[in-house]
Length: 518
Image (tube, rainbow, N blue to C red; front, top):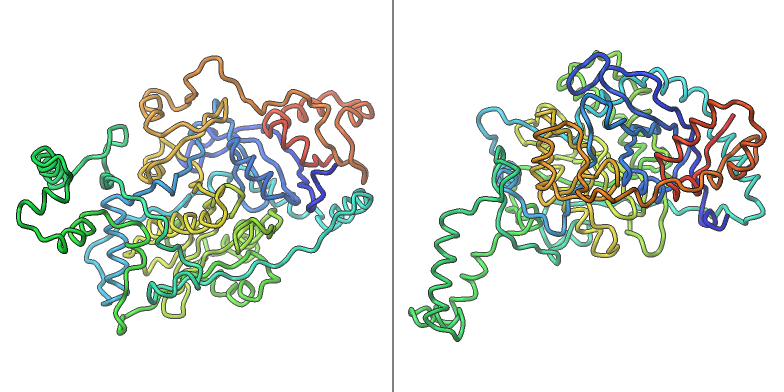
């Protein structure tokens, strides 16, 4: 049990799918189906491995759609931030924010927003009764005490440090590094992507102006093989003017666009604060009331939820309760791993909150809620771009943290297809759990809602459950392999559920996580 030496193990209750329920995407009353787990606690590495197998959390409830049976297959999608270059529509959103901050300009007309997983609650709506029941019945403290007792001989239980609040300031670029903003050291210069509404199955378009410049450059190089610089000088351009011109022709990086300098007399001030999801954290606790009020305003105005269904209990359960155990390893990011609220403060008031998980390999977007009065700023798009830039910043210290997970991509649901605009991105194969570039997946999705993206017919799930007897069970305050536990049981239906659990979480997680059996 050496793999638990660094902290508490994950403890989960598994609940196999028993029926179909209402789909939050196509509104089919009996079309959606998923398997779920109640996570009493979970390590960030276990959750990383689970989302790499198609799982996703809503509060402490972790679920995995039955992809070949559900009406709207939900494919895990991740963006590759290190190669990301904002599209034309993304740049418009960033410029719109800068104009608003600098001059107070409010764009005319309505703006369509793209919040991350605005229907997250709907996606697990059929499990609400179960979640409510589990939330009452599950006593994490008792379980934790029992596990501690079982693992005393292992010498575990090292006290975790509380992650420091990370403050992100929009005032001026010079403060970025000190306040936790992405620096300019990671720059990606590629051809800009097409704007919103482009055909995702086709390669990105290039502007005619860029094509003309490219032709001119090639022509100059042919005329003077010594190089591009001499070619410009031959036309009468002094050397001192060439460097600035070349620089201006390069597309601006995401950081350049986000952190463009504002005038000293700017109309507004925007700060982005990263706050750990913990009522023991003073910043989280002091901003809870304002954050909750914003959530209610958003749910009622944007999703038409009745106010009595937007209580503090619901808010806390789904957006403030996380099974993830905060970790601050020396080789990890300064803020540590775990669940966070990324709060957008405009002139001293919260106008948006992005709920994110920071994991060993990625930043995972959980949910976003914002003030409907500021819909004209396209805060869904803006926050996604900020989270991509934040991922790039974290990568500078923690090299393996290099992806931005956007939740589920649902090709059959028009309002969820926008996630494919954040390029380059990959979709997770629902059978072999390998990542496939979205461009290769789209033709198949046009023909069928459910697809196996891995084109190798011989490929299999490399982490499939091959030794279920090694699965770890927590039963009667004792930890034991499933091979020992099953000899004490006589219910054949339980074995089917345990084997299904093992196949869905994979061999690695089944040996690390504790499956709670009552």
